Length: 346
Image (cartoon, rainbow, N blue to C red; front, side):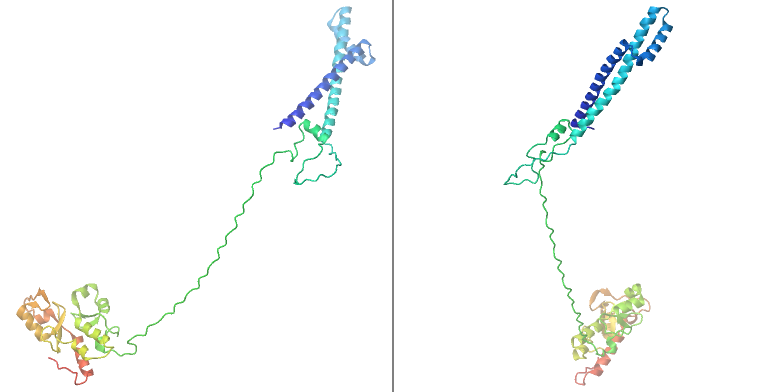
C-alpha cells in the first residue's frame, strides 16, 4: 500500500497528464476544423472518402454537399483529437519527468562559520534548509530527516554480572581400617569346646536327641533341616556356661570352668554322667534326675512338664539325652588342673 505522500504524487501526475491531453486535443481539434475550411490538401483523401460515402447514402446534390461537409468536419475533428491526445500525453510525460528529476537533485551546500555548541549533538539539524528538499517534500517523496523525527527513548541495558561460585573440593578422608587383634589368635582351644564341623570355638552349642552330638546351632540346623531341628534339638546350656567362663578367664582352664559342671539343682557335686532333661533343658547327674522324675513326676525347673510314660517307655529313654560333650569336657579339665584343684566326681 502507498503512503499519503506517494498518493499525492500520483494524483498530481495524473492531473498534469490529463490537462495536457485535453488542451492538446482541443488545439488540434480546432486546427483540423480550420484545415477543412481552407481545403487543406492534406485532408483531401479524407474528404473524398467521406463524400463517396455520403453519395451512396443520399440521392440529390444538396444531400451530397451537406454530407460531405459533415464527414470532413468529423474526420478532421477525429484526426485532430487523436493527434492532440498523443501530443498532450508527450507534453504531460515531459513535465512529470522534470518534476521527478527535481526531487532527486543533489543537496546544496552552504558555507557558514562554525557554531560553538556547549552541548554537542551527534545528529545536529541543518542551519539552512535545502530548497530542493522542501520542493520534493511538498510532493510527498522525501521523508523527514532523522533529526526532525521524534527521538525514541533509549533504555539502558542492565548487565547482571555472573556470579562464579568457586568449587570447594573436599579432600577425601581415608580412614585406615584398624584390624583388632583376635584375643584367641594362636590359642589352641580344647576340642571339647570346639564345633566338630567348623573347628571353631562354639558360641551357641545345641545337642541332638537322635545322635547326642553337640554342635554350633547354625551348623546343626543346616545339617538336620528346619523341621528336625525344631523337634529333636535342644540348647546345651551347661556347655555354653562353661565356654563363656573359659572365655572370660582369658581362654584358660580354671577351677571356675570346672565348677560349671556341678549339679547345682539336686546334689551340688561334680557330675560323672551328665544328661540333658528334655522337660526343662537342664543338665543333671543321671541317677539324681531319674529318681526325681520317678518320685515327683515333674521336672525340677518346669512344674508344667509332667512325666507321662506309655507301655515300655522309660524315663531314661524318653526324657534324657546323654551329654557326651559335657562328659568329655569334665575329663579334659580334670587332667589340665593341678592335683590340688581337682575335684572328685559324684
